Amino acid sequence: MSVTDTTSGLSLNDILANSSIKTNTNSDSLTSAASSATGKKALGKDAFLQLLVTQLKNQNPLEPQGNGEFVAQLAQFSSLEGITTLNDTVSGIAGNYNSSQALQASALVGRSVIAPGDKAVVDTTKGMTGSVVIPQSVAEVSVKITDKDGKTIRTITLDDQKAGTGSFTWDGKDDAGKVVDSGTYTFVANTTIDDKAVALVTNLPATVNSVTISQTGGELMLNLAGLGSVALSKVQTIGI
Image (cartoon, rainbow, N blue to C red; front, side, top):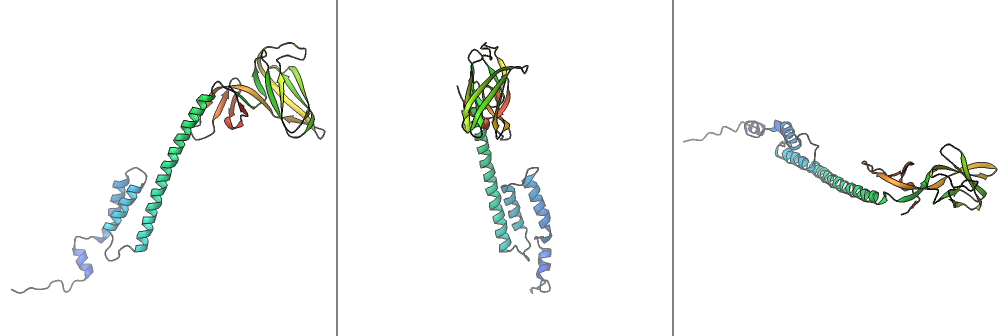
């Protein structure tokens, strides 16, 4: 019995064309792998690795993937894995930060603070202490106290003040020595620098009524009783 060689006239391309290896299915295979790996989710490291393996399985034997391209894809995979790990770490830090803010907030409610502002809720039977920010040495600083109707109740004078912070105390009395009603009062501080009237910043006491925690990582806001909100970073002193 003789054996006839029927492949002697066939090229390698003809053999591959008649074999089970299909070189024109790379795109379809990768698309199918991407669809099954990712679905409706963002491309993650597991999906990336699955796509890489599928690409290697379905590469053209006549034009195999070069070492340089393969190494570049592995480097991309390593970068993707590192970014994923970094995102998880940052998310954990953000969660811890929010928890820390919540604990910090609960400790501040009901506390007395001193913060920049021109109004204060004063119990005139106890009086109050505030301060004025002085940019340079001055001969005199005046603090005018007015009630809710804009009527001047008292003017406090501070002599020979150096640059820094100058404290003042109000005993709750008007200029005639009479104790006024408790309530919200406005404090306006002024001085003279180079023969010009200059308004100064006052730091006044307040009570923290509640706290607002930012859901986007912003700053903690203190809601002061009867006075509005102030950022925690602006608070000068936290008392009992």
